[in-house]
Length: 267
Image (tube, rainbow, N blue to C red; front, side, top):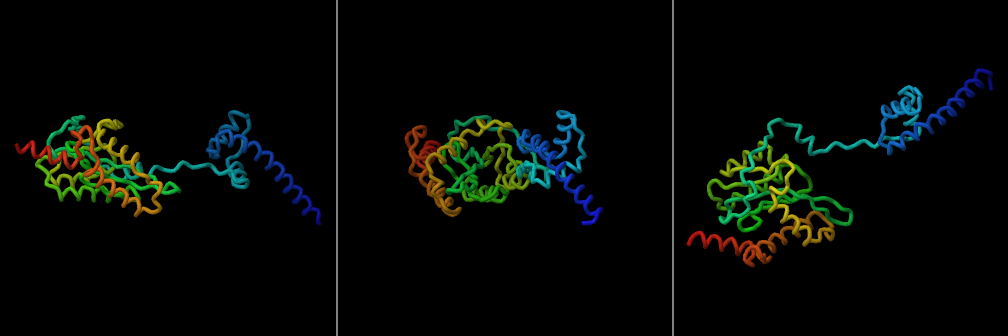
């Protein structure tokens, strides 16, 4: 080996040893930060807590060399969708928890919930509309994502019902319900929109209660495919509306209680 080559090798070996010493220190700071620190925070902590100034390029090189990868927090897709448009707007809480209704189809409430299914815990989403007076679920759609389309399909189902004039539909302030496309579709059906106060799920208690019963009574873990989920939901909706007797509905099913209210209103 030539003399220049020897000194070059010696310098490289010395750098490796120095890198390892710096790596041990950087790793200590990195792990104290629960592996969530990037080079900026590590540089600041080395400076402030250890009194050591280290070039950011060196920190980045050593982190890459020894695989110290910061766990980047994923962006919330829901918030990203909200930022795409400034046209979204919230509306007044017209319902104001007036859940004691006696006219079927006059006041509806709607919401979205998630459903974990299968042994791997895959996620499906359910959009549903409930008649507050009768307790009947009048529309629902299932999806594998939170895109607006499946909520619009839920509203499209309301076209099949004979809704009275000035029917009210209540929801939370979620992206889907503040979306101008959703609000336009609701207006086309001559339905008035009402929204819960921000962060107040009790304002939409009928939907929260219904989703709770659904998740308690249906075994979604036994579903192997998304199609299995759809089948189970459709069966449960049929059961809930026509076979599930409820004490609060004078021991009737929602469908029976709806007919009872219509008969009482016609009398």
